[in-house]
Amino acid sequence: MNRSEGTSVAEYEVDYSEVVGRKAECLEGCGLCCMCQPEVLPLEKPFFQQHYPEALVRSRTPEHYQALALKKGRGSCVFLKEDRHCRVYDHRTAYCRQFPYHIYVSDRVKVELDLSCRGLWTGKGNDALTEAKALIKAADDRIRKALPDAARVYREFYGYCREAGVMKNPSVLRMSVSESLDSFTDPGFLSKVLAMAELEPQMSLPHGRDAAADLPALEEAARGAALESISSDDPLSVPIYSSEDQSWNVFMEEKGVIEWMVADDQGEFHHRDFEDTAKIPLRFPDKEGRNVLADYIRTLNGRDSFMGSAFYLVDANGYEDDLANAYYGCLATAVLDVMWRACLLDRFFHTGLGARGLREAIIFYDMDRLDAPAIGAFV
Image (cartoon, rainbow, N blue to C red; front, side, top):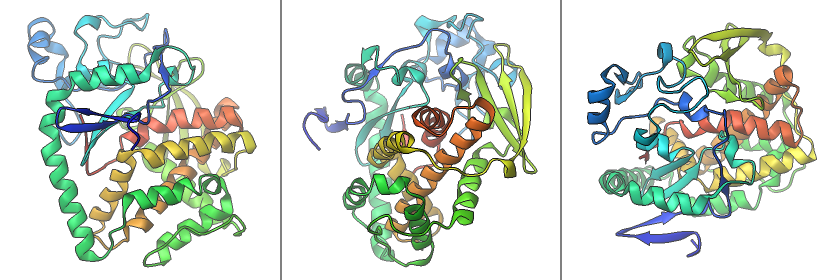
């Protein structure tokens, strides 16, 4: 890591490479971050207990942490006013203050950006590196507490991989993807990666982009990946798409039919449209769209949380899959997920499959991506 991309803080090093050169602004009237239920840390709890005890609830996640209530249990935070400003802004939680920055702890510390935040796409606002360093300083105690356990989990994971004969050097995996960024936007290449990840004991990335695409298999993989996150009857469990007009949109699938709904500021969800999933075929981006997608693949490839998700799958499958197969397969599936979401958004919002359409698909996808299980931890 270049010294410009990382810096020593106490006994640990922080990788800031994802935020270097970026700007972040809070867009008036957006409120996307207020659709995320924030954890209330122990030091923050007394303020809410004294002034707003009714706003403290247990989250519905498996961890059951203390959190702020949502309007009607599924909408925005109860402290979000109708003008989309916070009623307790000076006392907002650490997790509210951090958005759209995420601090991921593995065998090191890395700052990642939630690209579902539109304020990261304008090229305006505050210097992201400066803000990230301030957030790291504020989170120092949490980082110190999380690092020993996370480092132990990673050591154990690497040990199990070596014992099972499935270990690969993560840096080598990333380098091989970096050399094939454009190929990962090619249908034929994706077909071959998915087939090799499934069939070969220990795969390497194929060379070139001359493979024939298995379009039915790609469409099945793309649709399946996207629908896995929206196949729920609970609006709180599905991703929010903050559209260009700053409306909060959810898509919920049941029995092959997607319902599009819009959430209002009071926590109500309003029906907009239905569509059969079979009527949303997988289509591929144009040249400008592929360029946007390749940039996003570069971001995913650099994220420790994405690598941690591949590690999680290897662990969940009992160390039967080679780490290279898991990582390349995860990345190919993520790319297809973004492509199909671009097609979904084009169906309802007419955003196309160019640079705009792929940008919107990433905005729809990235918050979901950062919520994926991983063997490390966000603090």
